[in-house]
Length: 328
Image 1: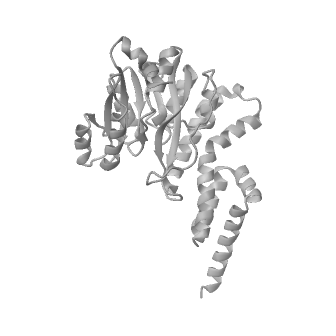
Image 2: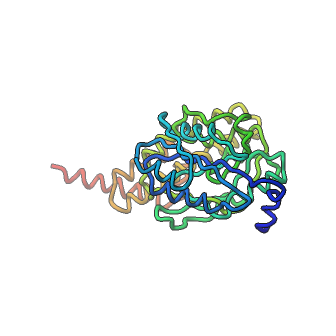
Image 3: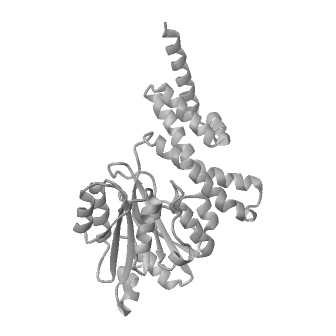
């Protein structure tokens, strides 16, 4: 679809206005890059109301917001959900979009989402594709997701994967039908919010790269993941148990749960291998312990099928045994 085709609806009236919620905390340099990427998508047919929702104290943050013509909102209640809610309440656009302060939009973002919603009044939200990057913006892995159903019932789809919120655009009306982000959740409140949307509304998908999603260095986010895991479990059972009839069997239910937790399991499994490789025996065993606690079945499968994981655990145990023998 050409840019002219995507822009056609706006020729009949004023430019489409999108409110973009950008939570931030003490990262003004990253924030400037994020805001520049938002402004880069604007043209005669599309304008962005940027809402910088600041949960920090860095003095440069308001200056960055001002430089990019953004509305600055100081948020004293801690947490990503509280900052997103401040933006949600302040939004005046016809659509709502999101971007975390350490990620970037691509120039292909937004218009395909709006075109689909303009063509399909039954769709309330559209998700696009994400490109993971390393800390220095080097590309990592393929675009995801690659293919999503066209029927619009995304509840089961969202139960087994986390739609990255930066690639999501919604009609402003979801603010009334779904409500705000749950501020009691210290992690994954955006996933909970999107699950609530999927329960009530049709969701669409555009196979367009929308967001450069920055990842932390491997093995550097133990505390972040361990803090998020209880909230991820809470969200899963909050939404899955009332809808248990959607699963064909308890085994299928368990499979979906393991898929939901797989990103945490994979993180600690890979950390086990990396730490054993560098001689950090205690760190390797600690990571293996967390991986198995997250999903005992996946841990057993990994131990049996993955030579790297199995040999890493064995190597770490032998190293600790040798170190113990050297003690006086």
